[in-house]
Length: 357
View 1: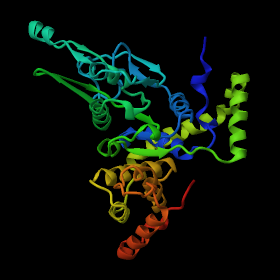
View 2: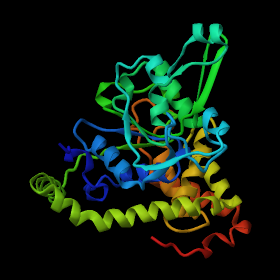
View 3: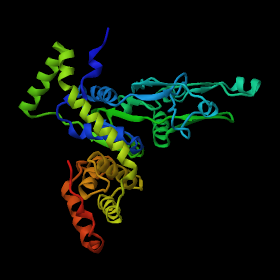
View 4: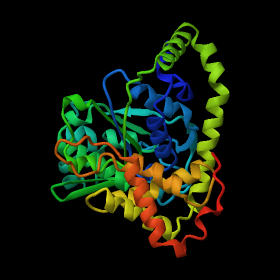
């Protein structure tokens, strides 16, 4: 029996624009490093993750490869696929791989049979969740309840696009490039700041306090449950449009350029916001470039940088006692003005690109 709940259309999710944007940007560019979604229970988080997987186009995998390698990406393939000359291919949907809270490290990274390696002189690798996640979506519910070490391992793999496992001098590496979606309920305690900082983007789910919007949520849900086929058919063209937009953005991304004045703006915002380390600057650069591609442009604009700031900085600001940790848009405006003032001579070319939204 088909479980319809898995495929509520992404475009039919009401509101939650920040969350949807963060998910789409990671789909276009997994190198952004995932997204942490904070919010109470029952707020469309897992619906959105599944909807995203369903929205993304099918892709080719090497038939018979446990990692589902990309037959066209010779550099990113596992060791077995690299050795083979004729790779059979098949087309499959992206899927959502869930990480259970109870998962042990071996379950996550996979395990190496040390005795086998010593006896036979060859490696025997038992794949784990990271192997399944390659080129898929890895969904980690309540990431704040996971063991810190496992979160570390996940974030490492997400950042590098590979899983490196070493046991008693025997090592093994395989590709693990996935879209990481973590969720947490802030009422159940925070993540340690050094882990927070390693999620590319972070969004807060808004509880919807507007009656019209809430009614819309109820109506859509009801329509979907009563006549799922019809509901899906209604949203088909919107989904198709969004899928095409993602594919176009992926194709455009390599040719997006970011000017020095925009890089200075990013640096200035990070300085003014009191952000530790350089990860924020780099993630902001990637996010702003991906936003440009999403809007069909090849040059990063000030608006891209502003929007990137709202997704990249909220979870990286140094905790100030008693202060709400909100991204203050007026502070970003001040950074923009300061930056324009300092670098006005190099600003001639920034505004020549019409915004296409």
